[in-house]
Image (cartoon, rainbow, N blue to C red; front, side):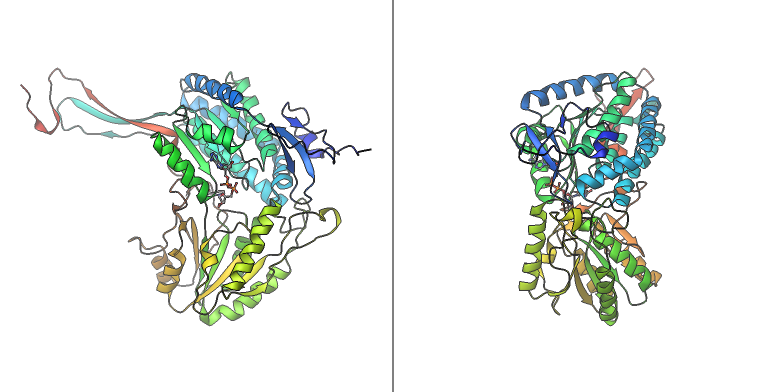
Length: 519
Ligand code: NAD
């Protein structure tokens, strides 16, 4: 006889048990995996949490048609009133902050504090978007022609296709959807198949509030495979903007497909972030920041610190302390509040970690700590746990594997003698997301942030704080293979609107620009 599957309490508290596309009655001996169903497994145990039904080509079409219709109505709502709806959504997330954050943790594997932090990020961007709804400013400019006026205005764009990565299953949608909504756009969210439960719980709340306001199709979810749903969406002209977050490999493909149809693309792709540590830095601060930056989220953040570039005069001492700190990190169930590092998302991620460690060793890297699987025991016996790892590059700093983003807690250590070399080393990778320097000298900080562009080539450059943990107020994103997109704060809202330049003749003469006479 098969044993009944125990329903996780979070599925009850977030009302996922009653959701039409969530199947909770799954038993250990059935896979439920099929063309129209995906089984979601907890990374801490690899046991199924629930199954989720997948969209077909037909349901995708229906969702898209409804989103186009929703847009036509929503774009006529005054922007501050759109902001009011977003305010209510942010408040609704406040009510479920702990449970939704815990679901992120259960499904994705980041520790509970980070899961809650992620939902807080969505609340923060909702607040930001509410303010933005009254500041969708255009410009006026003087016309060169008499009795003419010129202005620029920002207009709603259309349905936005939002493709998200597994590692931020709530906030990446939040960054996009809260701003897109105040800009007058409807949203269709295609989440990762590794985190559909968080997507359902998150979207259901936004959808309910939009429905109460008379806009039931403003926020929709399309859950499906990349072949059936993803490919169709990126080639679909009804989405003037595709905002895609994920690997550089995915971005190269999606970017080309959207460019082919001359659509707009907002790409938030992989990083390979470095921390430079100068000898005059506050080394306690640098140590704590480096541990958080490299071990946090088990190395599964786009902004994770993957390379440490440290002055040779302090390297041995600092690295010894770092190894010690790594060895005290408590690894285990991400929902256990005493744990600092949870599992990797899948068994495949563990294999990639093992492969990177093996390649680093073969390339002359010295394994200083970690480098192997970890078994926390208890309920987490079958989970995807690994040990946080530090690998020191050979003396000539030649370690090709460090040029790649391995989505796991591996930190590669390089040394330098002068800052110019350190900055070159930090820039000398394909990705350009986040970067950091720890220094006691303002001249070094200024050199790193050089306004000539000769400093860090990343979208994010920090001084005396690590590479991960961005605030929503700034524009978030990176250069080079990271894709060039900007989300979240500052003027990122402009990506979700179209710009129109308007010239108004309020005289009665035909006056041509550039003084052209046509008589
Ligand atoms: P991934 O590239 O495997 O998948 C990301 C998303 O793209 C998923 O929803 C996936 O289904 C979708 N996708 C893949 N192929 C597609 C296609 N042909 N058409 C349409 N959609 C397609 O990435 P992942 O493993 O989920 O996430 C980890 C990666 O994301 C890392 O590289 C990380 O650095 C990056 N990331 C970047 C940011 C950022 O803001 N820069 C944020 C989070 C994660």
